[in-house]
Length: 95
Image 1 (cartoon, rainbow, N blue to C red):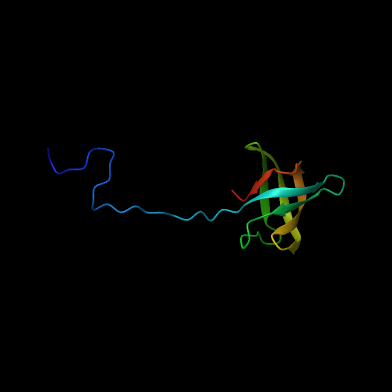
Image 2 (image 1 turned 180 degrees about the horizontal axis):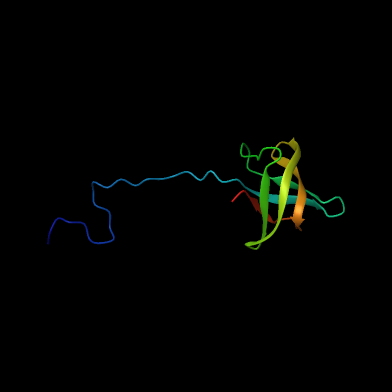
């Protein structure tokens, strides 16, 4: 047996690189279909900025786009529906 690492394994001198995810990811908390706005909920400290465009996904399929308008309260922020429709629980993300 040689001292080489088996194929597919890590040799002892290799380093693992972990890259943090910087993408925004939240959920639709409330929908007002008449006024065409939604309230979005994000993890604390990871809110989008005003005028930012985000995509809406329902069960993994893109269903619309929103534009963040505010106001913001705690980890919730209001956004206008630009295209498509939204449902409570839909995912919202920037990528």
